[in-house]
Amino acid sequence: MPENDTQLEGCSVKDDVPNLKDFDQRLRDEAHEDLADLITEEPTSKTQIIAIYGKGGIGKSFTLANLSHMMAEQGKRVLLIGCDPKSDTTSLLFGGKACPTIIETSTKKNLAGEPVKIGDVCFKRGGVFAMELGGPEVGRGCGGRGIIHGFELLEKLGFHDWDFDYVLLDFLGDVVCGGFGLPIARDMAQKVILVASNDLQSLYVANNVCSAVEYFRKLGGNVGVAGLVINKDDHSGEAQAFAKAVDIPVLAAIPQDDDLRKKSANYQIVGTSQSQWGGLFAELADAVSIAPPVRPTPLDQDGLLGLFDSKDTGGDYVLEPATDEDMRGKYAAPKASLEVVYDDA
Image (cartoon, rainbow, N blue to C red):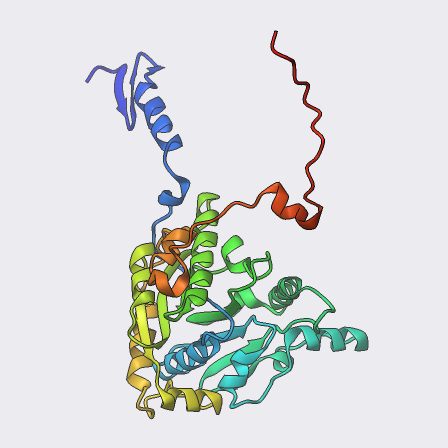
C-alpha cells in the first residue's frame, strides 16, 4: 500500500483527505432508529433491582414475601423494600408484625435531632432483610412524594454501597403519579415484574405499567418487563392471553386455592422448602433470576377489552353521542337564531 494511502475503520483516507460518505450514512441510519430498540442487553450489575407492580389487593405482597424468603433459602442475599403506603409487605414477612417505617422513623428522629440508623428501619427474617418506606396519614400528604423522600434517605444510609444479590421493590400499580413510577422513570430498577389475575381491572393496571415502561424506553430508559405472575389463577386464560398480546412471558401461575388464601390471611410464609408450595416459589425464583428485561407492546382500551367475552365487559357497546338538548334538559327550549336568512330573490 502506498505511503499516503491508508485505510481507517469506517472510512478511507487518501492524501490526508477523509472520505466521510459511509460515516455520514451510518449517522443517518442511527438517527432513524427507535431509541428504545438500542437498549437490549440484560443487566450486567451484580445486584438485580426488581420492581413489582400490580393492582392493590392482587397479591403483590404475598408474592414478594414468599419469593424473597425462597431466594434467601437458595442462598441469595435479598433486600425487600415495601413501597406501598399500606405497609403490608413486611407485615406478611414478619407474621403480621408491623415494623417502623422509614418515613415515620425519619420524622421522629428529626424532631429529636437524632440521625436514622440501619437498625431503626431494617429488620431480618429467614435471611431476608426488609424495610418499609411507609407513607403519610390519610389526607395529610402525597404518597408519591413520601416514596421519593424514602429513597433519598436510603441513599444517605448507603444504599448504593450495600451488597445484595436482589433488591425487590413492592409498588402499588394503581397510582400513576411520579413517585410510584420512580424505578421506571429514573432507571432505579433493571426490570419490572407484573402481578395480575384473570380480571379486567388488574390487567388494566398491568397494561398501564407496560405503557409507562414503553414511554420511558422511548426517552432513553433502560427498564424492561421481565414477565407476569398470575395470582389466584382460575384457568380462565385472560391473563395468559394478555401476556401473549403484550409480548411478555408468564413467570408463574399461582393457583386460586383455599389453603393459600388461608395461609396468606394468617401471615404464614409458604415460600419455603418445608411447604407444599415451596416448589412453585422455587421455580418462580429461578425464572425471576434469569428473565431478561423486555420491551412490552401495551394494548389500547379496545385491545384490552378484546381479551374478555364481550357479554361480560360490554365490549360490544356502541357509544351514543349526547346532544345540546340532552345537556339542557328542561331548559331545552328553542333558542332564537342569530343567523341572517335572506329571502329568495
